[in-house]
Image (cartoon, rainbow, N blue to C red; front, side, top):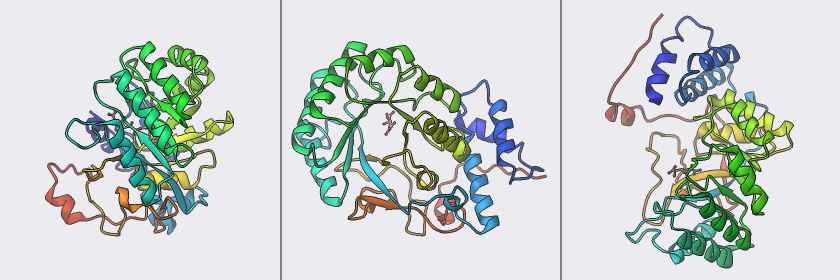
Length: 326
Ligand SMILES: O=C([O-])C(=O)C[C@H](O)[C@@H](O)C(=O)[O-]
């Protein structure tokens, strides 16, 4: 679905001035008004990469960025029943491993079943063993079934002193009224809005007192242009925005945002590599072990996104090619 949107927008690029990113953003946003906008981000990101290359500056520099190292959290893959993250103690052991690598933040994605007792027990175990040493977060990825389940697990997050609680239950992270209610009943800050797209609905959520942090992703939320609008809108409300997912565009954005806390290294586990394909030849990596002893990842410094792609790898894995000409 996202690819279909990207192809529709790409066909409208020939003949345009690629430096007019704001105008293109505005027109493409309208063009996708009946869809979920997921195909817009990668085009906007490519335009920023191109602008940086044309101007001889990194995207971070174009954005006024100043951070060169980004404090990261290890964001786990979902629980399994195959000896990876299969029990509360597996999560604790993996958190210890991440701590030894340098991470000072750790986010648990629980099991697909959304079993309240199991999720709450794991939250409490992480709090007991890692609390005070790492900031801890929970993202059930909407696997909990009811509001009552979300409340029960939220109370475990309170007991364990979690830093945030994200997208808990089956409203799928879109009900402002439910999350406002949840905020009234628990103390742990909520991180909602990954599943509402773009600046206006995210701000509506915040104005409805339905989240503590805003969530945004340059790939999901209409590119670097969309991401930075959301960051500045959050800033105007005195709120922090937490960037979802990993990638060069994410790093450049974070380098230029004051009101943000952590870079997400997702989705990692004890017996699995990061699922992102190895498309870089410049040493860029979002693998778990890429973290520095300071618990941080670097912001690329070259022009544009500052990464070099392995075009042979990409060609070998290509399933289709679309070319658009003036
Ligand atoms: O914030 C995150 O890491 C994610 O949103 C990851 C997703 O939750 C993903 O694991 C999922 O939706 O199953």
